[in-house]
Amino acid sequence: MSNENEQFPAHKSSQAATAGMPQGRVWFVGAGPGAADLLTIRAAKLLESADAVLYDILVPPQVLGTLRPEVERIPVRRDDPSTGARYVDPGAAVGELLVTLASQGKQVVRLKGGDPAVFARFSEEVLPLKREGVAFAVVPGVTAATAAAAALVTPLTSRAAASSVTLITGHRAIPSADSPAGRASANDFAVLATLPGTVVIYMGLEQINSWTASLLEAGCPGTRPVAVVSRCGWPDERRCLTTLAELRDNQTVRSWPSPAVILVGDVLTPALESRADRAPDEPEKPLAGQQVLVTRPAAQAGELLEQLSGAGAHGCCVPVVEIVPPDSWEPLDRAIQEASTFDWIVFSSSNGVEAFSSRLAVAGDARLLGTARLAAVGPRTAEALAAKHMACDLVPTTHSAAGLVEAFADEAPGRRFLLIQADRGRDTLSTELAAKQHEVHRVTGYISRDLPSLSEDDARLLTRQPIDWIILSSPAITANAVRLFGERLRGWKIACNSTASAELLASHGLRATVVSDSPAMPAVIQAMQSWETAAQAANIGQHD
Image (cartoon, rainbow, N blue to C red; front, side):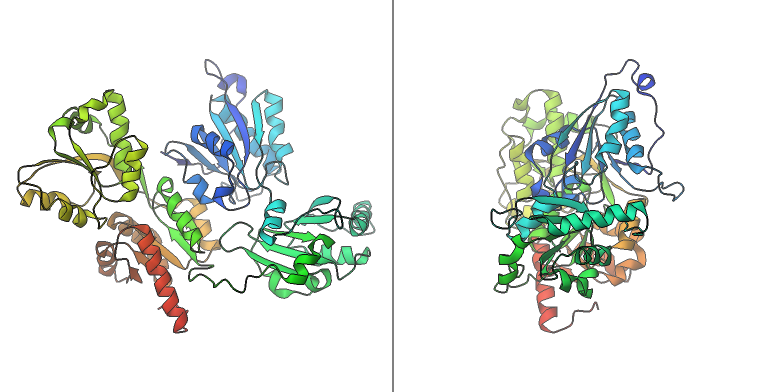
């Protein structure tokens, strides 16, 4: 089970913590700028084996969704949640926590947006590790500079226009020119203004006035090309190609969301002349820029978040339930020992497949399945079976319990069915099969447990980030979403994947904006796209 730590725990010396315990290790891993598929293969393998992951807020939720449920997940903040005060040195505070976790024998991944060595407080975080003798390594990631150049389809260097690349941060305050620090800063810009290369400014939106003025005053021509890429690699990425003088007066770009990276240099001239930041022939996707709240458990959210990204939306995951093992494995273990006596073993989700396969491995003999045939409620569950080297014999045309009932319609009475379900799974399938004179055994493979409250990070996200859509993918999720989100739901468009969820909403005085024809997530996204297309055509972009 994941554990969202609310604050950095007190550091204990490695000598005290490692008594009789193997020493852990820390990996500083770059997660890339935004798109989850920019994660490196090595980074993905380290995340698969990690015991604890400390992650930045800019890490894509799809990446976190790939973690095993038992992995300890710790969001990294720049302030102390217990007091609200900023850490004197947040990098050192994170470093001390890394020492503590590694000293407990854990394999720890410090997951950073972009590259861990570029404007990421790497020096501060690694210092406690060096002091305590904790082993660590660095896995590079795609940094925003190269990602922005790729988004703009432009190089950072060229023989003709850019023989160097300089990375600076726009967060540095511009002190008075009368002070030594002010004079040093002015000298920096004097050098930057004359460099025959590309200047890349990280985190530069907030200080546009300062650095544009400094470059212009240092002699940089106002016609020098500039490119701004906001939220590079995310579905709501924005790009602007302009000039230094025009950017100084551009009020629209100033309002764009952070993080943003800015490229300055003559290497951008061809792109500026062709305005390569636009693709006028490509129609905007109906969900482009829409903020979609995904409420399923984080470990199951990755695929849906990728599908939303492909549709042009920005998905964020705020789980309202968690998947945990049953109180006892005895009923499932007993069913596995008797598996060969069943005609059909039916899986209602990939969670059930995971539970069944793990306990089958404990039993140590796949021959226990005998001649039992396997059925999956949908293609994703069938894929989960295939990943465990178990062939799926049946996937209904309609991916639901009703679809399974229809698929089994020709089975002769008296068949024995084993249903692997959640603790509070609906009894539609078992009831219908029993009505057709079949022998049905239901076994709990996992428990879907309501989260009692929103984490501090999730509550902050909902306050900071306006939500356009929320997806509710089961009655259990719907019920707890109503409890946790309350009146917020009235301001969001709601997509349900079943009439059962929509009816539950209605019982609380809420209306589903769309109900998909199929419970599969692509069908839900298609329903959302159709609604947005109709709304845009009718020029009714406002919520009901």
